[in-house]
Image 1 (spheres, rainbow, N blue to C red):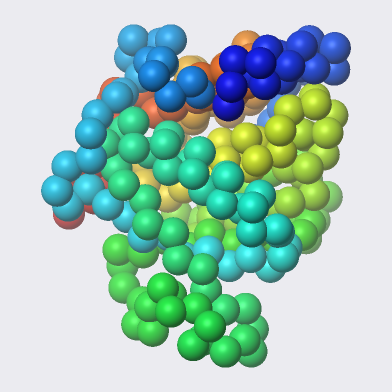
Image 2 (image 1 turned 90 degrees about the vertical axis):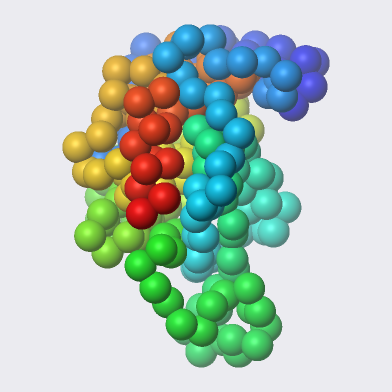
Amino acid sequence: MSRKNSFSCILNLLFSLSLEGLVLASSPNMGQEPQDPREASHLPEQGTSVTVLVYNYAHLPMQTLRQAQDRASLIFRKAGVEVEWADCPLNDEDPSLYPKCPAILDATQLFLRVFPKTAAKMEHGGQAFVAARIANIFWNRVEEQAQRLNVPVSRILAHTVAHELGHLLLGSNSHSPTGIMIPRWDSQAMTRICQDGLYFNRQQAEVIRAEMRK
């Protein structure tokens, strides 16, 4: 995001932000380092990559999805992990149309399902099922949050995706007071999203890399 767009994002945020934070589920300036010195910034190591199988039930435009994936990849890359995204068929779609989606699944893959709306009355933008390695994203909640605060929807989507995938790698009880794993997005967190973004802290990055090396 350019400096002009970043400034515009912050300006819109200041005009639109209410005092209450955004609730997440259980939920750049490329050259700038995260503001919190405890946040990680590592180059990916050998064996520290993860494949995420994407099921786009919300039928999001590819541009929106790719922008969110690029930002989420950056968040994980700063933690020393490379993410490989693979689009997968829905229901009875022809698997040959999705050559990157593996025919045989294994324990190294994570599942990301993007639904058009929540199945129940909930404010969360997503949820994580750690044992099943499944992260669900609810597009209607993500879009509502973005529109409410005049923040680019791809940024909200990216951080929600990174947060929920973070739970799959860190465990259910992995919220933290700072960074991408905070349980609520307040005005300070939203300002960070408009500027540098939110990232995993150093300890979380080490746990994630150790999990990948297994």
